[in-house]
Length: 479
Image (spheres, rainbow, N blue to C red):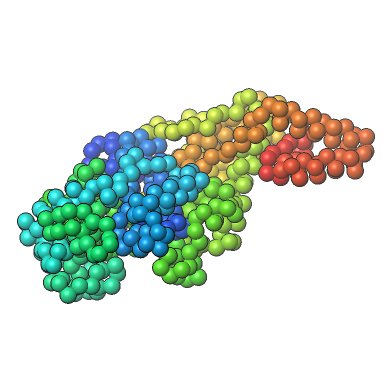
């Protein structure tokens, strides 16, 4: 049974979808006013892993993510760059999508933008005012936290414990310091939309309540986001949505741990950020993805060059095995499954079944990716024992290697990893390198070691690594 740590319940509980066999997942997306840092994209990588694994376990998943494309930061960025607000959103939204593609993140089923849902937000705010949960003051509309009995149940704090200051707007017109903006009256020169309270724009929190329930309905299954969103953003989402509907907003809350740098939360406002695109210039996307998944999604992690190097070396062990298996199996190499699915109870019947079971056991336990990565490494260690025999033509080793490689490709695909090597697919490249290795073998047989070493060195300069094994020489890209 798949279990998930629920922030609201403060414990790990069975995942119980609202609709049997289907899961609705909502991920709080970014405010697209700047390039994403590595802490931002780690959260989006986790949405991606949850979605992939839920699909693997047989669920039909609808994944919705939002873009906040109007707020104070967006307006200020438009002023600084001298471009329209929608130009800022397009520029940085496209940049984020480019970063996520490089990390193997699949696009959401629905990408909802705040400015496409203004009318629905106005309707929701009108209803909250009519029901006494909100009030208008000088063209602004505020949600009254005193009016909602459950305020604080997600963060576990009472109104007396809370303090204004965490993205809480100061205003003399508010009745309570923690009342939050549903609608902001327009200042001169700011973009605005019409409303019953005059021109303005929606507050930050109302966006997600409206968009999540529009596409997933009330009581949907998983709402994700960084731990820094628990209060006030997600607390406020709950208050708005449940005040309107009188029913539970979300079944399970899943919050990812924050990324630290120099013992502080990585944050654009603090200036201690490593931009995802800068990291991707130094490391392949697969290595960054591996780093992001090395701990539980709830774990607070540190970003460092040493951690990235460790992740790169771990991924390289997988890639080295993949290349060795490809070389040994050749035409019998199993294909990478595009969207692996294995409903509960459907077990791997090959020699990889034990590794598949350990992988599923780990992931079923609150998406324990560290345990899942460990299961894959165990599989690789076992499969490496079969490579030399498969190269020599041993049928038993070849069959075992093929089955283990098939399981390896399935499990790594669920984790979102790929092993691209388009050039290696070229028969021309394969033939040329094989010919050069034959010349090298001939030189070694003639004891012309300088010539043999020269061939190997030249191949290394071209990015081709040569490994001598008892079964003969083999090569891989990445030398």
